[in-house]
Length: 578
Image (spheres, rainbow, N blue to C red):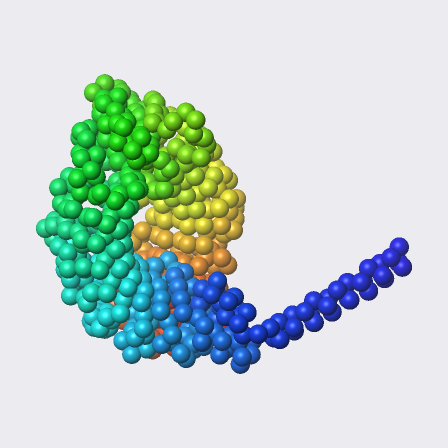
């Protein structure tokens, strides 16, 4: 036995030596191979992997990296990449985000360090995500107004009035979450690809207009009134080949689409080159045969080969109401379904029927039904019953508005990553523990301060606290509306030992004392970001000078602080976190 072990160790040493020698041979490969490798990597991954190895790779990463996506990157890595990239005039694509949970203030921080105009004159693609209060950010607006070479722009959310001032004459692709006034789009004569999500960012009068050279148009809306106006606004688009239009959420008081042949008429008269028509609509009707017949004409089935599926959903009655005999909720969508809708329910849905125009000789397994694509579920009330069709769901976001007791739903929601309890939510400690037991991928929790104390028995329930400690990386407490909901030193002392080791984002309210923020920075180890809502308007300002005085006592070496009224957002960096 001893001899065998000796020879095994010797063979392993030889293999290890060969591996080390093989790694060193990497440097003898010609630059052309590395240039090809870099073409398959994002600029962020390439710089992090190669630029710090030696001077040759450092130069190659500056010469060959053109596409930089900084979404969901921590501040330490972000700073490292900017210091490694001296030749940023080679950049042609840039994505930044102000995600409160990961990278709050990244866009503002970037614009303070860089000039988009001078350092990035050749920029062809720019994405600005989760951007708030852009109208107040003069530094960013002035830089955006001077970018004239953009061919692709993604910006969410933004008022169309602001976008109308940009020079977008060369733009070919535009992705926006914006208001209902898009009259300025008609001036984008070169635009070929438009993705437009309608949001309530302002109260502009609805005006829908469309560039004449569009080849692909994708629209996401919520209100039926929007769809009616969009249909009336369509003009002759001779080059349009793809039209996608999706209703993101069913709201029972707004479910009334017509069952006429309007889409068939619009496509036939206005979109002569249309090859792909995809949609997801909600209806409120019992006349299902007429609805399906609308999309069963020779135009859909034989000429275009566009097939639909219709899901008839009836809400389970409450103890006050019986099933409605006058109408039912209907989800109508094209196959295959590429959209990920959200679903809002009060008492739960019973699936009465699923009807499809898909030919029988087609493999239906290739076209899964709409329940599979639902990613967000909003429960307005406790679902009283459970329909087996929902076993197919892969919901990752759960929002509980009031009570929740359904074990059947808990057993189905095994893919959950995010759970949010409203301020009115009511759930027992046993149900909460059961939910934690069945959600191995859970990482994000939004909850009221007082509710979490109840669910954990004042943080004395060891089983629940251990699960929270092992799972939760993003913890958000609702903003305090009164002093009792604010965290003081004692309450922080209760939660920090539970969440300090794994939590990457923390959001909570304090009354006024900044020393509580210092306590959080001292006790936590892995925070990427911190959001503090200070209840009192008259408080000592939190500045970079204040942070510099605290950092010797904390685990964070640098940060960027963004203030919005009484809210402070800290984007935190640490040593040795590349």
